[in-house]
Each structure stands twice: as C-alpha cells, then as structure tokens.
Image (cartoon, rainbow, N blue to C red; front, side, top):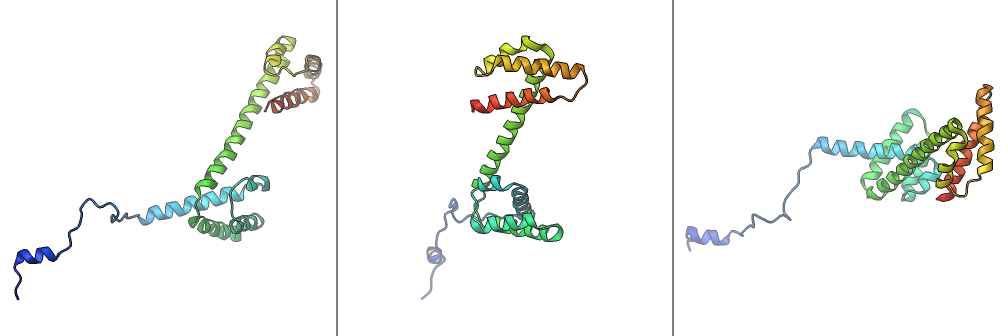
Length: 183
C-alpha cells in the first residue's frame, strides 16, 4: 500500500501559527540575575525596618523569622542571610509586600514634608511676631492665641539674648501637636 504525497500531508497535524498559548518566552540569564538582585535588595530594605514597620507588612512566619534573624547577624552571616531572604522572596508574591513598603515610605515622606512646613511656619512666627498668628489660627482653629503669643515672645527674647532656643522648640512641638490633632 503506497501513499501519495498528498496523503502524507493529511497525516501531519495542523498547527495554528497564531496560537499564543504555546509561545515560549525566553528570559536571559542577566535578567534573571537582575530580578534576583532586586528581590535581595527588597529583603535588605525590610531588614532595615523596625519592628512596628515590619508588623505592617504582609509577611508569612518563615520570612518574618528570617528577617528577624538577619537583623541580629553582622558581617558575612548577614550577607548570606540576605541572600536567603532573596531566595525566599522568589517563591512568593512580592507585590503586596512592595505595595505595603511603598505606603510606609510615602507616609515617612509625608511626615518629613509636614515637618518642613511646620518649621517654616515656626520661623515665620518668630520673625514676624503677632502678625503671623492669624494664618496659624486659620490652619489650626483650635490653637490657643495666648499660648502662641507667649511662646513667640519668649523665643524672640532667647534669640536676642543668644540663649538656647527652648521656646523655639516648644513652638514647633505645639504646632506639631495641632497638626496631629487634625489627622
């Protein structure tokens, strides 16, 4: 029984050229190394955090134990522990961890920005005196005008007498308390 060439063609299974499911994605060795290094850096960033910040991250028990151990280790052992944490992160979904870490960083940046704003406000109060109080009262209606006036006068006297800036710091502390009371 001989087959013609056309018959052989019928035996070959047809392949769909547009089938994306069968597409193989090649990842270079360099890209794999970059990804592993990024995960190790993420682990190092988590190791630098304090206990309260770590509690806010969605970490499983094994990963948290590895991070706690890395915080206690120094030098070469720490480097190896960071590599282990990076390896552990490869098998986990790091997106929720990264998102939570970004939120922590953003909160820190917002706090730094608020402190700069309060420092400028304090400097303005000390320079301009009572004339700078109305804008503060607009920002913080619960502020005590008399307390602010007393702190400003004391800060100006300390500055003129070249004394330590105790009242200057107290103005900042008072403004900070007002700002935190609004949150």
